[in-house]
Length: 254
Image (tube, rainbow, N blue to C red; front, top):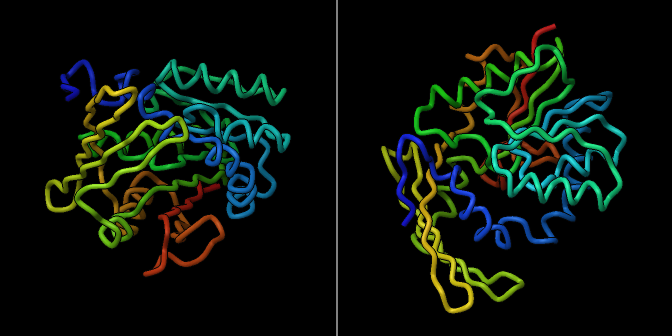
């Protein structure tokens, strides 16, 4: 099991991203990004020209946005994922600015029309004040009137679909077993991932903060965003009992 110390959180372990990559970013999920980004733009900033993709990973969303003609900055702290992103951008013949940096430290004042945090890339930090720090960085980096879109698995939806153990097989034949545990009164999840590949098992532990719709709204408002809206998907359906995801959209005051 991955041991975390002050100098290394779970997301600092590049080996985790290598082992989990086939499950997190299959080609089917990569292919969905074009449609998802078109919906994200329509839901937030149809006139956006500059976009910040925080925790961009292998460039799934950033490349799709660049293919729409937008100016995109992709930020991630993991070299392995950014190398994948650069390769994808070259293959698609688009330009994206890739920045290897922790999202708690990335700030560019008044630079973007839209900031995105997709695929449950928000809530990585044990101290929730650091989640708020990320939101303050985002609002600083947005131009007046700019918007943020955060897409994750909301607490309400997770509670409805929770199972103590799940297994799936990747296209390459490797197997992933997930064993999630609920911590601190449903405020946090610890998930043990066991990846079985070529007869060898590797275990990793990831931890994420869980946010309800109201909790995420309050955190966005505390960071300075107004006109915060919650949706159950990128189509803009209400965040209700049938929600598949939690999508929060906030605006930086003009």
